[in-house]
Amino acid sequence: MPKKFAVAFLVLVLALFGAACGDGEDRPGNAGSASGSGSGSASGSGSHAGEQTVETIPASEAEVTVDVVLKDFKIEGLPATIEGHKILFRAKNDGPTEHELVIMQGDKELAEIEAMDAGKSGEMAIELKSGKYTATCLVGSGGARHDKLGMNFDFTVS
Image (cartoon, rainbow, N blue to C red; front, side, top):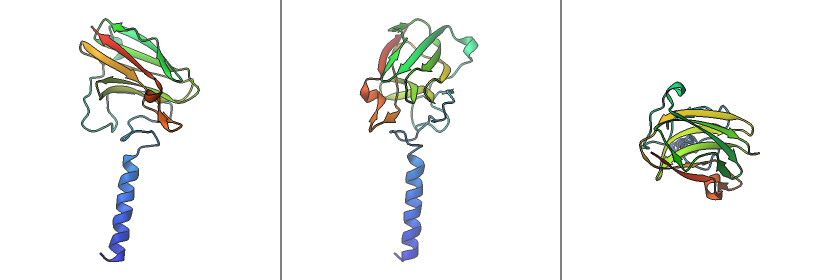
């Protein structure tokens, strides 16, 4: 391969690799943002391809509100059972580092309140079917993701 084409190919590969890496989070296809905006999404805004999503709903349609506190490295305020399918999650980051609230079912990300800086809050209203879910934080820092440091909470929707 001529040197000119080899260099062009290398530049293309590096550009594609950089785009796939997101903005520094420890996971591919970063759907969150480090801006601290606290907005919610249902695996939207360029999220991880092929993942199951849930419908977002207007906050006014929520049947139940769940206030969640995110800290290093735990999630507080979530009940073990949420009675109602239309849920407004309001999250506040009381930790000194960036956190997000991701709702998962098995290994599928369903929805998230994007990464928020310390002291910031965000919310999302979603409709979940009856079943078992996990709330987690997938932000990475210090070489480890927060979920690997214990920032998970299992709950049931009935």
